[in-house]
Amino acid sequence: MSARSAVVLAGAGLALAGAALVWLLAVRDAGGSAAPHPSTWAEAPVWPAPEILTPRAPLDLVAAEEGPSGGGHGPRSGRAVGVDVPAPDALRSVRGRVLDAQTREPLPGFHVRFLSRRPQNVTAVTDERGEFLTERELASGVVAVSHLPDLTQPRYAGRHELEPGEFLLPKAGEGAPAFVVELQARVPRRLLEVDVRGPDGLPASDASVSLSAGRRDERGTFTAHARDFEVADLAGRARFALFGEEAFQNTYRVEAEKGGTLVSEAREIDPPLPLDPERLDLYPGAVLRVRVRNDEGRPVPGVSLWLSTPEAGRFAAGRRGETDAEGEHHFTGLRATCWTVSAVHPWTGDAVEKAVDLAAGEYADAELRLSVRSLRLGAQGLVLDERGDPVAGVAVNVQASGSAPVEITTDASGRFQYWGLSSAGLLLGFGGGFLDDRFDPALLSVPFGATGLLVRRVERRVERAALIEVVDAETKLPCARAAVWLARPETASLSGTLAVQRFSAPSGVASLALPLGNDTRYAVDAPGYLRAEGELADLLERARDGRALRVELRRGFEREVEVRDRITRALLSDAVFFTRDAVVGATDGAGRARLASPAWPGVLRVECTGYVPLAWDPIAAGWPGTVVWLDPVRAR
Image (cartoon, rainbow, N blue to C red; front, top):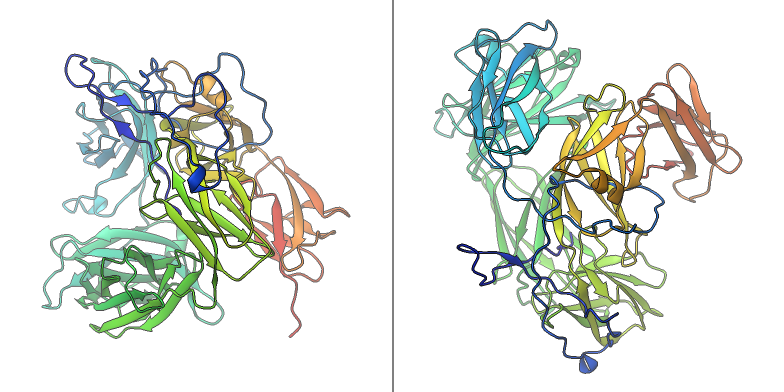
């Protein structure tokens, strides 16, 4: 993954009744556009020192998230290009009640835990009427809320599911009344208890336990579709709350680890679920030493590593690491299975990987060779900031003629080099991520073998925070499982024309990281609702006076899509989309379809003659989610 540029805060010696903090911003000369930058080091001019600007008066906007949208118009007169972080507001208390989601009866003696951006856990206990009141310890913004199990009360021994799981706490001054919220608790259908024991047979308190839920396919292979985590108590017990009728139909996989050195075997549990606790025994895990070397056998420090083991379904267990000065890294506490260690070659952008079978408690070595043998130097250059200092960690996208783009990054000295097979030319893109800085040139076309390239950073993408709430346009209640997409055009991106960032709002609220500027667009999706799209600047303009960004969604389903062959990329006509009860739409002769339904269809089945049927989820398709890929039926 590419390293992203960050906001730099510098302290300035301004006396403002004590200590003061100012933003150091690099700006272009006020007299007009900057002179074009040369493309070689020798021609590099001396840039003036950046000016120190006093900060603008804050617009008092609560932090906001990002989202994309299509089509926009230019900046309007008087529109603010950015919002400064408002002054800290007073801590608040929260009062409310907890009700049983099914019976609507109050739940007395129920422990509720809150976590704001402060960060500090705040716990409250409901009284006989199911009501609670916290201390003034919560900061404004998105507050997460969860149930804290109580082993002294059997009915609360399992973790209940609370709705909402997050809510938006408005900021307020000193003396503001407690914010009121009503919580509904779903009672688990069943508790699955795990007994974790150490190598000495004693309870393994504080062991981390994971539970994957899924089904077995026709070959009997376990496929996971959900995962949960708990920590073992002093008795070594971890309790998992299971919800819904599928709790009794799922197959489960459970495993544990402790302290990064002890692990258990993964155990699969088929229905019917056992009544007694499932026991997991910990043992010393294996150790894998990864050594990274170049063609001369010398160590390569600072290489990012990824160690993973595939798990059927949507999950992969893995760990990250980085080679030290000796070009080595130790992964400890590994269970006995086949692991794959991989690294991205810093000069070619290609992945290098190796599979290793580990036995219980084994100490093993794996060597990765980062070679450029048989390759040639294709491009070499330097990236500098506004002061002329080198910039490390800048993403450089490289595309050779007729090849897919790869990504390399600048090293600690700001230099980059790309090695590959000879080609007619190279296209280089700098930055291009959603919060990446802006560089000049952003795109560079050079002949293969070009050296002495010089790129300068011309704008820092100063990051700000914002809050967003997604609500039903009629009821004004939060929309569950919302997703917010933000996009901005980036010419430096060789793989597309947009830099996109996704934010999840499972309870209809989320905190966003936004770049300054007016060129960001948003899109918001939630099951059961029409997609909302627009210009982020419009949301910011309406969110004055400390309010969060707000998007209202209307019920229904509409989507314009095209269906393509995954192999040939050809558009497919006569592809039919339907639910269990009705046809929602079909592609025309041009391979395009307009899907519409007054009610949300959920997962749609897509069928086309000669192609494998597909279950298509509009939410999972992401943004823009307008292309559906079908695989051709292969002859047996």
